[in-house]
Image 1 (spheres, rainbow, N blue to C red):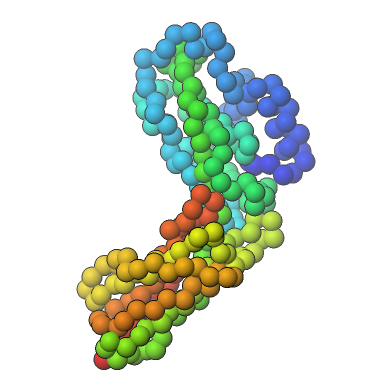
Image 2 (image 1 turned 180 degrees about the vertical axis):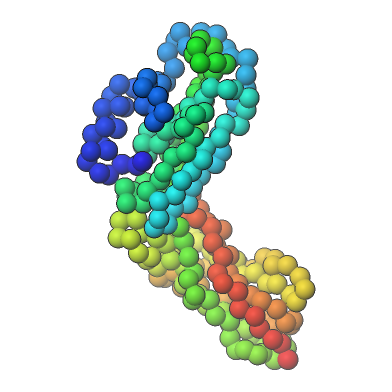
Length: 241
């Protein structure tokens, strides 16, 4: 449940004005911030955070199951800017791209509250954050040429990085600031490993070149950033003569 639809915004505005978020599974509200009475006594249980701390969303709604990292039986997480709420008995939130703006991507403040029990008499809260990322893709654009190739000749590879646009429902070419893609190589019988970095050019075009020495598969890896998810291109196998 994320903002943008007017009804949802109205509900969220009213909720935040009261300083609380309503759990989906309960009639009563749990406070966004603990009162002095609730944190007068420190809890015996422990909590260091929650998982997952991030989500990458493309064009379909995604159910995110939150879990406490710790021992407290009672907890709740709120991400006010995104309208997200989860607790120990309603731990699944649906993030729907139909209700997202592109500017929602990035790191958002979150509050994690936890208690020894449901009397809420010994509680504590942790200021933390949740990262929401837009999905990225190389699609089927990766291509290594020529194929086959002579040993020690220059192998060139190209691809286009794209990022999903939540507002238009399509992919757009993506050139992150100072962005790089990593050329990866997998020799026959081996595993992919990082080979070298290549700058991502205008309109998301990535042009790289290597000296061909061994048969194997090549691909690009985009490491992602605070607002865009990591991604791999499809591999391309090249035979070296």
